[in-house]
Length: 368
Image (tube, rainbow, N blue to C red; front, side, top):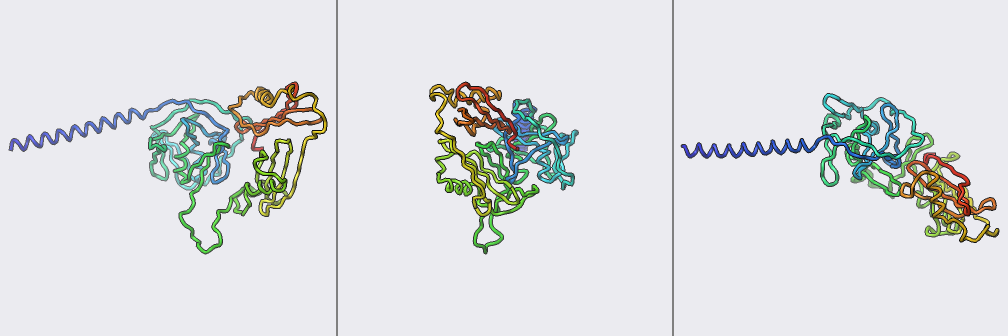
């Protein structure tokens, strides 16, 4: 009997030790997940598209808010995403809880776009003490490695990583490095409700004249470019495209295509978006019959012209994406035409090919 009691005592002692170890581990985990201040970057140059439509985010007060980059991850504002999901967004100070629930009846927040948005480094907080609740269900999030990620707080706005946003919206997440575009895309259906059809191609959604979404069958940007190239008698490796845009003009949809060759020949096409017909064609080539002012050795060169334009704009080459850098002859004078994109702004310069003087300068939003 005494031996049995000793056995029970040893067994319960072991259980108690295990419980104490688990409590210690949980306590350590709670201490590790403390509030931390981190350096992040407000990035107006990142475009966010939801099912192909570019989005602009505003705070509840109408101030424009932008994606935030931290540790290689894009964070988006939760309240603005709640609007896109059609849910009401609530903050409970007593429990530090953000909840998304119900069916939103209030209109989308109106705001005014920033005239000159700038990328900037900020100090934000990672908040493991914040709770995210969606339709009464507490949600937690992790990165691709399975590590837990927490909401971010900056200037009164709560942000979540794009992967977490994708989970909330039940959309897949994509990234296009060349255009710095984040895409949230509804997944395709696993099968098809209709099996008796000649084709099963997706229909490209585009904004209508009134800004709503319509389903129309378009030839697509690649087909429009090929039609323009064939009309010009050129191939893709002979030209540089500077514009491919679907536009609604004069009551019809059309692709506006612009490209140029190394021989300073510029082409501008308008292609019917449905039929592929060439609606308008413009060709411009410099007059090389007139002699240059001097030998090419005395020109400043394209690299120097780029530097002059960048210095004038107060930017560096690593901050911009050049879309045009050409030597052209205009009004009897040789000049370099320089165009580049910074964040949401487009800069265009004309630089004197010999003196380096800035002959003209324009800056406008890419949204224009």
